[in-house]
Image 1 (cartoon, rainbow, N blue to C red):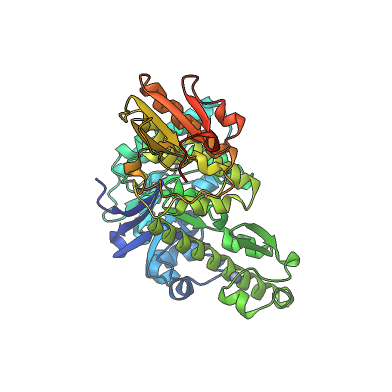
Image 2 (image 1 turned 135 degrees about the horizontal axis):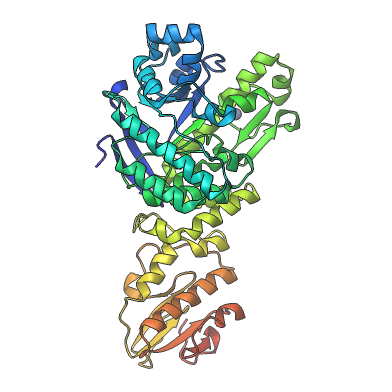
Length: 496
Ligand SMILES: [Zn+2]
């Protein structure tokens, strides 16, 4: 067990956790946002991040500090916490990003870890190789060997109480990601960044991000805190949390602000296109878009950065409340409507419904069926798996109506889209108290028909009758041939 990370509440693969950072004397609640602090260019001072935004943790780059004479001297002399004026937990990156950008850096894992320790970092990073997406398998494997050597070098350094990151690489080769995660999990390192996904996010390939995270999660233990490196856009936080990511770093809040770009949970807007701010944060409440456009460069950048931070922290609070409510997937579904590529991300998440189902709580608040995608949720997959294990009588009615009077059937179960057959005894339990629209879509009926097929396959002796309320031909066509089909209104013993 990793004693420094405790999962307190879960929903899908998302969790509210407590990351104990011993060197900082802090326990950070996750999911957490780590604003990126460029020590050469502070957009919002760390002390303000702590006091006004509630930042418990941030990230800065030890390679930049080490390569800049006056910063290096100050960091060694004062320590990072005093230098940045921040009392929370400080994570330091190693220069791997610079390695990926420029092809070479002049520091080893041992040197940079010792430097990070000397300047008072709370969570340090070795020099891994961030392999970009879509490279050849040979390159991904060769890079991974270097990364795994860096993890071994890191494990050999005496880092005291400082936690150490074990980045997971492997490009878009999902089996390599899974193997890399399993290797990282087997070290005694502490935090597990999923690396080199920024190019995927820049290209709006959220479905590929989901696949990479899912593969990494398969290799990591449930007690492993996961950092999605470089993920700073609030529109994808809910999706990433639902896939099991715990930490996010945002350089986006400052970089976008420099470019007059305004973050929202539905995507990015340009300041010049905004007439009304769709936001209640202190910046947007106190200023009109025209006022911010008229501000000088420094002031405009600072105000936009503050808004970008408010919307990012606000989304993480919303996500944590959704985890407590058991409605995280409903939130992901809402976010999926913000951009077609987010819908691809959500659909990719549903491709992993069985992996998610193994960790998803058995009981939550209420299942809301909000789109055809809801028919593929983990709760539906779980019920279909369970149907194969249920005992059935000799003759069974599955009906969307009320239980019939008389003794024509040995038992009558509910027929409930998208789940399918539901024994009456389970009717009042999660997820069968689901709220559905009255105008059921084809996907819900088709999923219910798949459930019927599962039940029939497991109980071939049972004589099954399905009484449906105007199902489409696509769903009726999925019912096994042995099933007797009666439209709901046509049954003589129908009781309303
Ligand atoms: Zn705002």
